[in-house]
Length: 117
Image 1 (cartoon, rainbow, N blue to C red):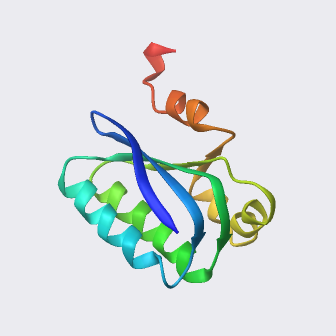
Image 2 (image 1 turned 60 degrees about the vertical axis):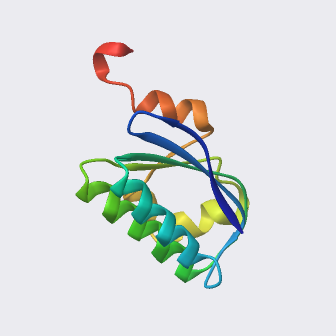
Image 3 (image 1 turned 45 degrees about the vertical axis):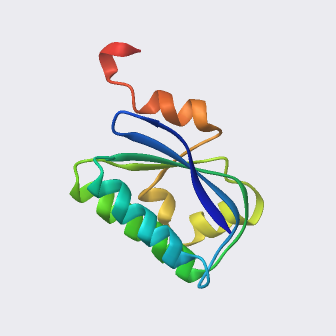
């Protein structure tokens, strides 16, 4: 699995998850999140359109992402979830923690202040 930034604008970063998010890749996400938050990123969009599998450890790494972002005054939005990934997120009730959007642009618009819409 690769997790890489595709865009950074101010305090917003878009990360693309590619492949799987599991025990062998969760550490990579944790390291990236720590560096991002220390670098001033508060708001994060995780593009899951290429995410194929996610384990319980992968879900835990998303929770860590949420916790660190929230402690910096920001939030995390997920987009592009499909198939079994959507079912897993809903089954674990993480959809009550993360806002989910169809694509990156929709998630980006959700970060805009109300006066900008």
